[in-house]
Amino acid sequence: MITDRSHLVDLDRRYVWPPYTASQVHESADPFVFVRGEGAYLVDADGRRYLDGKSSWWTTSLGHRHPRLVDVVRRQGEELFHCSMAGSTNPHAAQLAEDLVQVAPAGLARVFFSDNGSTAVEVALKAAFQYWRQNGRPDRTVFLSLAGAYHGDTHGSMSVGDLAEFHDLFAPILFEVIRAPDPSEVGGWERVVSEIEARVRAEQDRLCGVVVEPLVQGAGGMRMWSPDLLRRLRAVTREVDTFLIADEVFTGLGRTGAMWACDHAEVAPDFLCVAKALGGGVLPIAATLASERVYDGFRGGLDRALMHGHTFCGHPLGCAIGREVLAVYRDEEVLQGIPERSARLAAALAEIAEVTGVKRCRHLGMVAACDVGEGGYQGETGWRVAEAARELGAYLRPLGDVVYMCPPLNIPLADLDRLCEIFVRAVNRGISPHG
Ligand SMILES: *Cc1c(COP(=O)(O)O)cnc(C)c1O
Image 1 (tube, protein in one colour):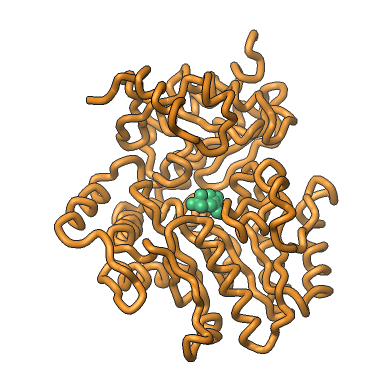
Image 2 (image 1 turned 90 degrees about the horizontal axis):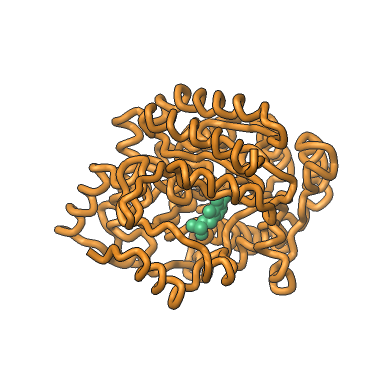
């Protein structure tokens, strides 16, 4: 077993270029070295077990190594791992497309496969742009997106994103976006949406579509907004006949308590992007769902086709996993178990809301967050909370001064109670390290 911890850390420091990490931290910090996953737990090379408070970057909604997903990997190993999707298909891609359409908001009828959240968004942006180009509205070339948005790290997804630390540097090479104001600047989400309504009407001649993370902005700090406002965005985009693109890469597949965040508002977008939990944390798989009306705009010869693809789009192993993820949700009634769990997250938040310095406690479904400082993404209090959680046996990764729990949707109640208890203690310790 290669579990000589210090040797591995040494190799990592010497050879790995990690994402979102300052080199001076990488060179000195003591990272987790995970060697095993078991349900809601991750196991470090030193044998310590940690509750996975963020579902492995929001992917393991069914926990680590769900036996049915492990079986799929084995079974596909006897069949087929990869084949291309242009000019050929495979049983799992064809059936996953049908499965997704069946659980998706009404009207979404076509599935374009890719392999991660950024590309799922990228596909929606390109398809929306091309749709207007070849269907009589070539002046529609600009998207409207929300302040504080995160849609991924590729070019188009960065353009519609709005996180200073991630995107500002690249501004000169990103495309123009109409940016909604930040709720903190105009006095709340209600005002933001009124402003968007006005902009959508004023800019309708050049508006390709409106892109949102429905109800929860994830990486932007677990910022939550209401189903009512989402309904208003659907209404105004309908009114001027432009697209609503729902990026459900984080919120989709039950994270907010419903299958889709859009379901809380009974809203059907024109595009819906799904990734992260679709692969169950086993491997990357993503999909962009579109309405039949959108697809109709691409009917015809090669000159009207969406000239976009990825080597691994629709790969049999990924699609087999995606199907099994949906089947487990159904068979194990995963969504039905959320209210009980969500109530426990809420109770933990209620407890820390009393702590001096804790602000803006919020939760929805299986996301619970609060602010432990005013430093935003650069804040350090969140990192102290994470450090305290590590000592207590849980793996949390803060978004600067925003700390959150985002456990597997099916986390056993005893594990959830333990996670909540650690969260409460860690916040207390992180906020007053000498207290
Ligand atoms: C994580 C995320 C993405 C990007 O997904 P990747 O798989 O990391 O490319 C896009 N949109 C949202 C809302 C996300 O949370």
